[in-house]
Length: 405
Image (cartoon, rainbow, N blue to C red):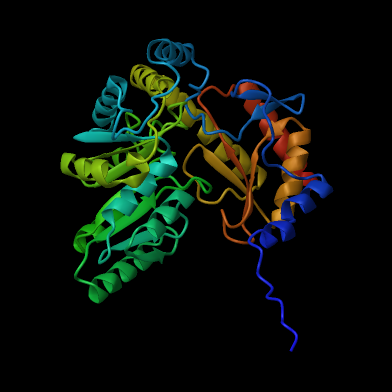
């Protein structure tokens, strides 16, 4: 009897078959991993030609601020280029403790804890707090790091329709009825990173309190931007004393890299000793920590930066609306142009890029299917002349593509 040879599945088979990016490359519309050949800022050099940047998260325009760069340079000279270990063991510098103290005061919370990235911050918070009998409820449009954080937890995961507080209340009531043995963590973005809309935090907090749930607000795109002093979404709505935890990142308004969570001392103490993404990751380098401290100094001493940011944001919202573009429900410096199909977003992006505008095409699954968009975002340092050019190019290309008349 002839022996049948067993055919095993090759793990890399999916890689060999994956050709979606190559198809877009062949069409000449591939927009991702474009190398920038200059310092990041409101104007950049890409593929050898100048572009106005409306695709960054440099909201307060601090990434090239002399004081920020000087602070980073001094920290490297004093502490070296890295910490060679995790915060838990040998990687905590007095610079990290100074930063955490400054962040807690800035956020008007008892304590703060710094992680190596914003992504790791949400992974660590959620996975350490949500245990076997617990539940975690998230908005359907939350950032990928929140989704991954829920997957790393041992709790049950539930999602409610985007910013729909009636659906949220229905869902949390059902969760409480099904499971009274564990706690509930609700996680939302303060500002949603693609759409630019704000969570309905006042209603969400009322519902969460009704069902004894704890709330984590991801303020990656809110800190430095929202609120009277830039402390984020909770400050904007006057709810700092109600929100249980706020996380933020350093890669947006703070012009650096890393993340943090601000909360009560006991909560921070628990996360500090249980979050695997903190304990088993090297701490942020001295230059990153020092640059955030310098950015905080500027944010606190120059409120006019935030005022200018909002002038630019409101102007661009109005300009695009008046032209007839669909900008969704944005209330922030993130102003999306909803295009529709993925391929249309790619062709629109390419036409903008060819005309010297660097923007971000966003397709599913980052947004729902059929809701592909060009994501634009604005800074405190964009000039009127730069914004005039952005409006002129979008208007011309929009008409050519049939998006506006």
